[in-house]
Length: 402
Figure 1 (cartoon, helix red, strand yellow):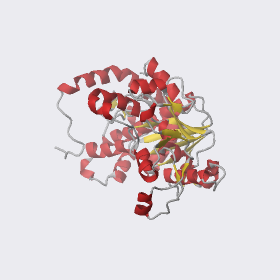
Figure 2: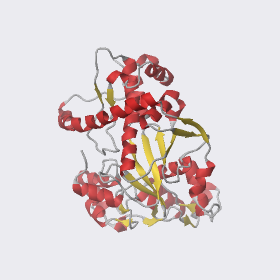
Figure 3: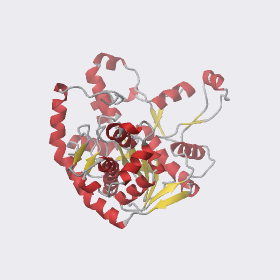
Figure 4: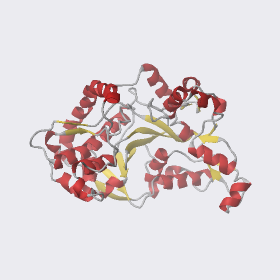
């Protein structure tokens, strides 16, 4: 299921899929739900915009954060007139658009005193966390993909010109004037393993990650034909829909807990493989994957990702991710380095995990099944959403097992 044509056209201009987690649909929702309050708003700003306003007295937002709002034309780097019309706001209600390397002249007297910093301390506006994560991993050259799996997950590749794929499966966010990030984020990463522990092995307790992974390791590659769609928190890339829910398909009498846990992990990796396919569909070469995140502590999960992607995955050592990227961007803005391209040579690779040919073949065969199941279950997801108000409420995630 793909976005409607008008939504797809908007996506292509702004680089941001039309999805409930994006600021543009949130503004539309706000106008519908709280019209009086919506009409009284003088300025719509993000958290970082507000911080910069308080620190420096400047109402600005950078191209990187703005490119993730669904409100900025990624070709012209200006607010998109149609997006603003749909949102029901004006350009005057938004911050001034500036480059990520813009240096604000200093702090207000109030915040210079509060922080103990000199009033003329330069402040670099900076960028969004996703593009900065690529920078922090050294994934700045064409064809080098940054993958992260924490609570959620993402795949991103740096490009020199903004673009999205024809089917609208990826986003396109800015980093600098000549560097953009194309990719997609998934809602369900490590949270799926946490759910598996709570739902399938509650007796293991809160610190059950190692035991759960050991349990998953007992099941075969492919989980004996069991497939999990890991849409516990709906999904973003490449479907960009709030409809889907998680599902196990192929469950038989012979499956046990280890199969269910492994299928959950495999589902996350397969979803990232679908995102990677969308990155390629946008016309991008993919020749290297660099990965980071909490999942990297697990040899099983590292190998599973390489097998699902069907290519080696490289793990940098001692990196600080987005914060390191922010430092490098600031150094470029202040003239301390010539370009953020130096990141490629600053990040040391600690380990390279290569795919097992037999496992990779199994996952490659299952990937179309994973993709087809989403499409096949869209009518079911729609029915469940329609029925939801009449069903008993779900227990809170923290509820103790009955």
